[in-house]
Amino acid sequence: NAGVTQTPKFQVLKTGQSMTLQCAQDMNHNSMYWYRQDPGMGLRLIYYSASEGTTDKGEVPNGYNVSRLNKREFSLRLESAAPSQTSVYFCASRGLGGRRNEQFFGPGTRLTVL
Amino acid sequence: SQQGEEDPQALSIQEGENATMNCSYKTSINNLQWYRQNSGRGLVHLILIRSNEREKHSGRLRVTLDTSKKSSSLLITASRAADTASYFCATGAYKYIFGTGTRLKVLA
Image (cartoon, rainbow over all chains, first blue to last red; front, side, top):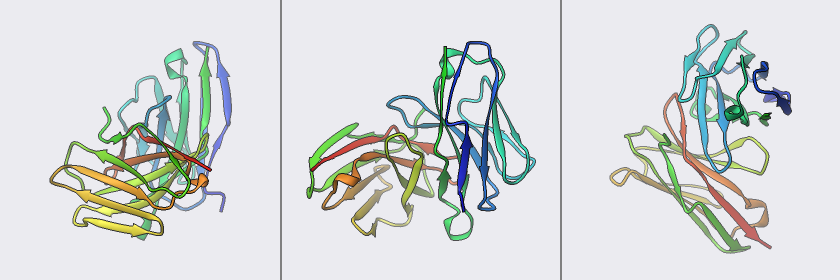
């Protein structure tokens, strides 16, 4: 199992450009999440998807959109990037059964907006 | 806003010593989790303690929970250089809220 994978690993954008961060998991998990992590900070929830076909806002959704393409994939889109969106973005999925309270994280995408 | 606040923000110890970090939270919880993040990597789940538990052990990890004080502590015994990482507490049954983290450095 690859677990949770994210692409790209690094990205530099100019203000106003758009891009989509991709996330996929191969663990048959139902719930998936997008977080951002700023220097010296914990993770803040941007959006989450409880199951295929549903998405909900988290703590900091402004400036982002998401798509739960299927059970495996959950993408995050920045329509018009701003310097304040410079951050490391993590995708995660929630475990099942006895591990349903655990989150499994991808390696992150480092985004810089100039 | 952050639900969990870790203390201290940074901790530096010698290999073999014990490391203790604390987490405070604001609202009632069903469980509290601890995660580790190595530099530049995603978070890895370490241990979960339920609201009706007071103490839990896993290998060199010991977690305590005091729901009356809305606080938890993570103890790493006999620390190793490989334990160097940031440690975060997280609360929530579905939407998770992470604390600000403790950066632990274990010196060889």
